[in-house]
Image (cartoon, rainbow, N blue to C red; front, side):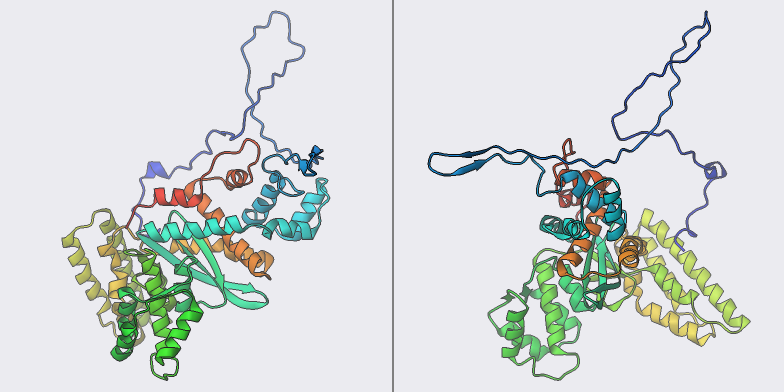
Length: 471
């Protein structure tokens, strides 16, 4: 739908593009090859260049003989290892393992077979440790990327997919935009889980204006809100302290609709998100999954049109009505894209009136009319772009980002340990963010492991803050 509404390109621009000149990213070495049997009297005309790129993969083992001294007072002094050497496997090997597994989407047995085939003496368990042991810095850097994105972004899009962890079905949630991506795998995908992820590692529950506003919006009764506001304590360190507070106030014993504990907890989580300056004026863009409907929420137009496209029709009249409505939606979508390029108040009012004419019409196809009425109920979220022209009209970015996790799931199934789950999420987040920032993952890992001659790459959240304009 998005590509179909792009303006037609000129005929001269539709020619197939050539590959272009090959520019290696490594040091270029020159080697002169002399011609054989040159006849007498021939004139030298320079050289004919022919560029060849190659790759050398070889195993290397170094035994560091570290000097050891004993001082007069009995202390032992041992010479330190070179920078970047941490353990019995060098930085180049650690970089190769992480790159091949996470970005190359290899499996553990195949990676072990590859390493052994080039001469390394390494076991499956040792490769597993290279993937998961002492990776807290990478997990923390991925968390910092999420915080930077939530603090500075004008919008974030979210999506989720199935995941398997510790032998149980779960869900992986993606949060990101054009400059960062973050993945988090949890057992549930409800709104409590999404709000917890939006805290970006913080564990507190906060009662503030944002929390009380959320509770009112979700129909928590006024007496219960007044009971919460009457208490002097407004910040709780963790879930245990928060639930104990609700128990003291008697909310856990109530059997009302909506569930008082759930709404109050969601409100306190949203209060925590806002207290940390996350999503203060940002828009959350989603595919209409209920758990993502928090704060300023916008909907994906492609998912909305897909509902009309997938509607079952049985007569020629129904098919004609469906085609006519789809045409109107596509034309309206193209107008929204044009509005983003040049937004004006007058065009905004005209588009709102046009939206009503499309989605309040009666086609005579009862099921289609009900669907149009349902979409019209989401008018504010579908037309969020009129107030915020910088946000996309679709969640294609999230759909593209989450494919790498789906591929990882198909290749290696699920994770067993919590550290394995966190490492998988973190390295997929880091790799995707590097791609969006134009940083080679190979160079990024080389910088973190201090490989000889590595490029200096700052923490990725610094680049995210520099690229994203505040909302």
